[in-house]
Image (cartoon, rainbow, N blue to C red; front, top):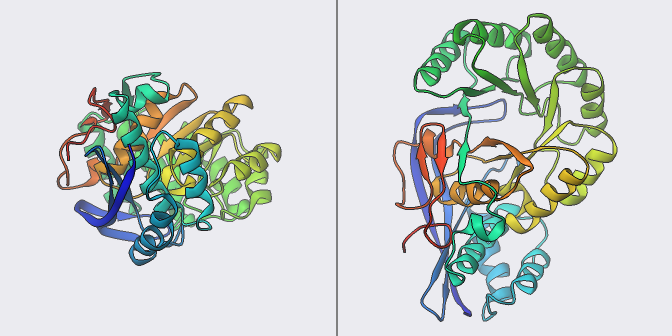
Length: 355
């Protein structure tokens, strides 16, 4: 089954409420969709999220990377030459991880289709169901409490709370949310690089002293401050999750060697897709480090690919794949079923979309 064409389009979805973090505010998802065509008539689908503040990519740069560099590198190749395709994908352009991720997931979609099996089974098939958290955007205390209560009422028992925009008020936010939702809801907090190392330690200690029972703190300091991450990890009891600090397998090794985090968040938009993500999860597992699979602001297309990857691996113990739940509607039918916090894998071949 040879690659005959790669077409680039757009996938859009308005958000139910604005998505607010320490880095940005977004009201509508506008991502790049790609379709890989083959001589067998099968089509693989992928999606890239332009997240300039994290990956450095825009819609224009993603589209250009795919059409001008990636497409010429792999056009005409046979899907059965999968490792060679992935080698060309990695080498044809530096970084551009979201563009590569879109192509990578479309290729995996085609590979699983060729074996007439769901992708998660091809990758390992560890589980058929996932439980995701739901994001609580960074706002004033009253609004965050209201949003947290609404999520808990809808049956979400894991909340990922965005902080970092206002370090001085972050303890107050989390304490108020814990008091509102009670002790049985799991709270994860994500600072999105919003604190200094000393601020992070001070805030986390305050949360520990207040018995807020936080499961983890994600990316408390700047992504490039590995020593700062190590300082926070060494001086707090709460587990520290690295996100923006880990894009590649090499960065995962460095982080683990320096003991700079307790956990690693894998996102396909950072790794360049499933092929590299598998390397990270295996490196982490070999070193006793559990992983989360998360997403950027993505629609059901790419989040479904991430769900297949997450469902395939034992060492992925935390799921942050709420992208489709934040959207007003699904831009495309098919894929896994997203029913509240429960994600159930489809038994259709590939990622599960009918094109």
